[in-house]
Length: 133
Image (cartoon, rainbow, N blue to C red; front, side, top):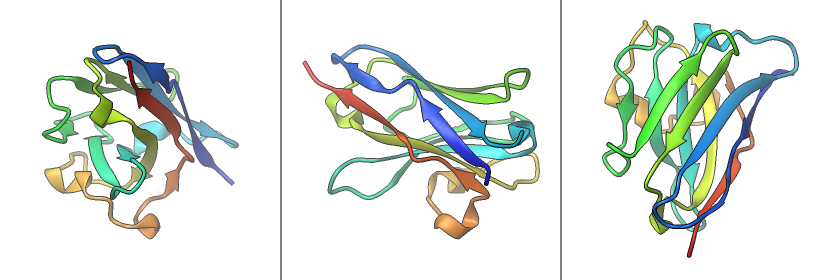
């Protein structure tokens, strides 16, 4: 079964940076044909959409809480989607995971709302990001 594998998480001080990666595990997936969303969930909090990128890499969406600090990107040659996290704050502490979904070549702010597991074609288990001094 094809799943996604996230990596790049860790412990970082406030103001620090991390770069998360999302890649398929198992048979080749060709992530380039899917829109990909990054989501996060902190203990005791609801799942939160962080950023989404369309299958055609158009008009990425960002949650207000991360705008100007996080950047989503895709490397088609490596079949990997990245999430660059800058100026991290303790409130960013969470498990971050990625998930694929279908689109029409673009994404809207609605992609930041987690639609339920059945909406997504593939997802990973997540990578822990901890921001603490």
